[in-house]
Amino acid sequence: MKKSIKVIISLSVIVMISVILVIYIVVLPALSAENAKSTIGSPEQVADQRILDAKIIADKKIVEAKILADKKLSDAKALETKKISNTKDQSELTKDVKYKNYLNAKFLCSIKYPSELKVVEETVSGNMFKSDDESISLQIYGTNNVSHDTVDSIYNKAIKNNNMYYKVKVGNWFVISYIEGDKIVYQKKVVGKGSIDTFIFKFPTSEKSKYTKVVEIIEKSFKASSTDKAH
Image (cartoon, rainbow, N blue to C red; front, side, top):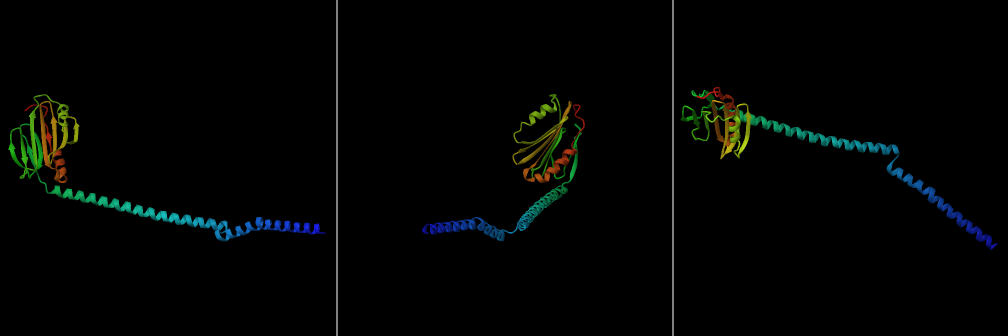
């Protein structure tokens, strides 16, 4: 009888333990899932939330991109305005410059020069012009090519200047520009078999914005029409 009671008690304990295990294994995960569902939401809700989050991020990126684009556009407009202003300033400066014409009767070379320059030296071969304070000067002259130099030989000697910052050689002429003290020097030579015509224009580095355009006008006006023969 005692053995039967022990067996029944043992079986009851086993059943109770089994029931507890079933509750732990089956019921607890279900409760956890339900809790998770109540916290996270259904799959549809999760998908909707992800779409909403993505839209929020996309809107933020669009705003950031628009701000960046507006800044770049503003910077570009400011730069363009500055360029236009600088161009106008330079144009205003060069508007005040008047020009006169010079022709060398012997070598038949001619040029336009700023009227503010006065003749300080005059020879049959050419003239030297200078401003009143001598900060600006223009020299134009011709020489006979007695050494039978070529444009290459003269150009190669000229570009040995260490302060050279611009040089170009085309056909029978070349242009070089370099720094000499506080001056910018712009020189052009036309080399022929008979003679060589040259002009040299010097101006202060501090007035580059004004005289860069003046140099262009002078250079375009320079004519050397008779270098094929000696004079």
